[in-house]
Image (tube, rainbow, N blue to C red; front, side, top):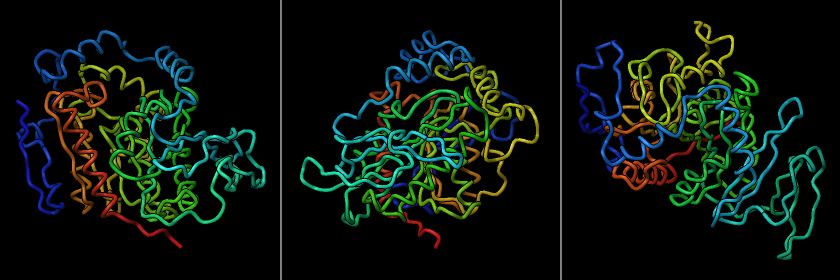
Length: 397
């Protein structure tokens, strides 16, 4: 029987000491547990979980492609209500463009005169008059910055990476998380549209995310953010890319990340004690295996998978930024999330996580009004507030 109990970690700040950790003999058992819907799901998330299970088929190429077509048609270019929204183009080394959405509480971006990244890419900055009488500049990637120095701020700049099994998704699908972030802290949020695995397999996605991270560092001050408060976060596959880009940044030593938030991250391409024989809602074993095949391409099923592709394979987690996560205990990513967070703690990295009993993948998005959903939302809020007040990482010279 899988049991959880609350454990006090005295190395963490007082208001963040409680984390739910696995304590039974299951840790020592290597057999794969089969998760069934009826017996395991928390009652407050069970109804919607069953509906999701009926509505969402097991993933495959057709499903991934249909989802992407629908998401692109319905969501691409949408603006986040009640917050300032803009788009920019971030140039890859080959000159092609990564589309990214930028969000803020403040009008550091002039959303009324944003032009497309394709129109402005490669041009010299052009000053134009704002309707408010100020002067703004287009940079070479199409982003608009106020002319002159923006008032110096301690606000963090957060790169948030969307989920979707590495195969699906877009920045606009992350409005749920972006709203939660901006409600918690006065921040600039940058969400890149990385290359999906249906378009190209590893390493395209991680390279896009790292390119976006470098752009965040180079443009933080222009956007009125503190360059020493660069945070990275994401959910599901976005959480996996969050972990991967933090490893990549640590090794490259070009950008120092101050804080990371990989939520129920997709980290391990290998069998774990919870990603096999798992038929829970939203994401199951079959979907997981197919997603990894698309993402890894010819590397799938080999021992040549680098830890930048599957961060759970990393053996040295020292030197990573402080981390916060949460996960449901019946979902495929439960074991890899807990193991990765515990490995970070063992390596001396401040790491805190919560496990929600009876909860499946994405429970906080599907059932935000449930008790586990509300607790996860509050945990995210409190963790961001604490990180914004306490975590910095000076950038390399």
